[in-house]
Structures are given as structure tokens and as C-alpha cells.
Length: 395
Image (cartoon, rainbow, N blue to C red):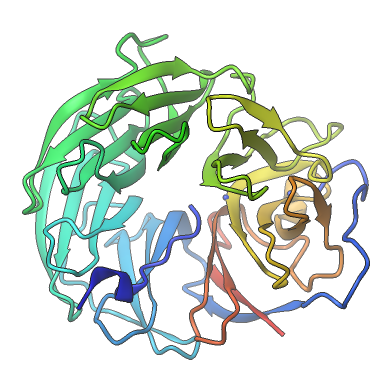
């Protein structure tokens, strides 16, 4: 069975401030959302989940990690109708961490990598029926982000990690059997001994057909590295965003339909008296980036959670972001739909049915059609004492 039939879906992957400038455009009534499911409340869920078909039944299943739980990795089988049943763990506990998915051993099934916050990297090779063969190795740092991509054109997937404190970007070459060997670390010269990582995305940023890397770090900002197709990279600190404006999340997608990837971020934690919310940077395919965030700066606090997809069926990508409308942490976080115009413009949908407060800190947002109705559900992972996995469905 070809791998693309398995539709493992990760549209990933991360709010409101100074007023409601740029509300949604007039036209046909927009869809609204209602909460359809709450999973495992009272637990601190972290990082981006995976929505993949674990057991080959054609339905999306859920994979997520939680802090302070044993095991940290949890999986649920989806029934294709919006319900999820937990899988009894057969894998060892390495803690919570960043997740990545890809066909590592070329058998057509989606394999999982968990890069633990505690320095263990766990590879789970899927048998396509819900079972896994496990392999692990230990590193000198914990991790906050992971991606699988073929960076050297050999047809096999490499593993790219971003460290929690000091590792920076690490690139591991695999043997196709779930074993990994460190090949490259970036940046070659560190700005400081510690370089706390935040986010990672991969894609072809300069239209040369090769995989490039973009990573975000606390205090040191965004770093971009262009790949040459053989596994080598050149680049460094990017200048389109100030280093102090830490990006807690990164998404690469083409929001203005020009054929070039654009960068979408969330997670600034400025003061409550300042406009906040997601940022969008339009790429020109040659290394240039232009800010296109008008209509987005209506939050007082932006969390890491962010995802893009077409919620209203108009053919344009929209943003769903987590954050706070008041800036008061006692009010909690909400989910906010910013409608895209397909040109890089945005407008808040004020009556979306999504909560504008009351959630614990939203660490990630994912869009996926879990019930085969043709419309994406919104899956949010929250941390803190009142954390939960919540799913919001179009009415």
C-alpha cells in the first residue's frame, strides 16, 4: 500500500490585543465551531501532536506527549467519526518531547520519532497494524523540535533536531533501520554556550529544489540554512525578525499563492499594553522576506499554538492561533481564527464559536479532517494544571 494513502497529517506544526482592527470581511455566513471532544483533562500536554494512520484502517489516529506522565508518549486509535480510543503502551517511557513522522525504513508505513526533553531519542518503526519495533539512543541535550526529511537526495530520511539548551541544530543520518548517527551541528560557531531552542521547520525556501532549514531560538532569533542537496548547509542568523522577538512556533506554507513558501510564527510574550499576535513573512523565493501581519495584532499574548488551513472553503489559507485577548493569565488562553484573503491580508473572525479565554496555555494547534466530512477539525493541546486535548468541529 503506497505511503501517501496513509494520509499522515500534520498541518501544523502554535492571539488578541489592542482592539478589533481588521474584522472578517462581509459575504456569505462563515462557519462556526463547537467543542466536540476533550481527551485526558488535567494533564500537561506539550509539543505538536501527530495525526497519522497507525493501523492502516484509513482513519486518522492521534499521537501526543505529556509532561509529568508515565509514559510520556500516548496514542489513540480514531474511528473515523471523531472518537478516539487509547492504545495500551508497548513502548518504553523516555518522557515527553518533540514528535516527527515519516517512512524511515521504506515499507510504506508511517514511523514515529520522539526526541525527548530528557535527551533520549526514540524511534518506533511501524508494522502498519498498530505495532512498533523500538530503537533508542541518548544525546547530550534534550530536544524541543524534530523533523524527518531527505536532505541529501539519497532517498532516505535524515533526522533534524533542535536542542533545548545547548545542542543548536543537529542533523543525523540514518541507516534505514531506525539507527542514527550525528553528521552535522549548526550553527558552527555558537553565539553563546547556551542556545535555547524553540521551533523548527523544513522546506525549499529559495526554489532550488533542495531542503532548507529554519529554526528559532530564545534570545538569538531565527536562523535559516540553505541546503545544497548533498547534505551541506550555508546560512546563519536571519535579519527579517529581531532576535528579542522569540518565535515559539514556525510554519512554512504559501499564504499568497505566489509559489514561494512564507513563514508564519506565533509566541511573542510582550507586555499587555502592546499589540501582539501571529506574524507572517512573505517569501520571494530568493531569500527575501516581507512582513505581512496587518490584521493579526489584536492579542495581548500569543502562545506557541498556530496552524494554517482553509476553514471557510474560499480557497485561501486561514490562521488559527492560541493566545490571550486580555493579557491576564487568570483568564487563560483562547483560540482565534484569522481569515486570509490569499494575498497576505488577515481579518479576525469575532464570532467563530471558538473560546476566547478559559483554556490553559495552548502549546500547539493542528488541523485535520478526523471524521471524513471534508472539513478540518481544530485540535488544541494545552498545558498547565487544567491542560487537555480538545477538538473543535465545524457546526
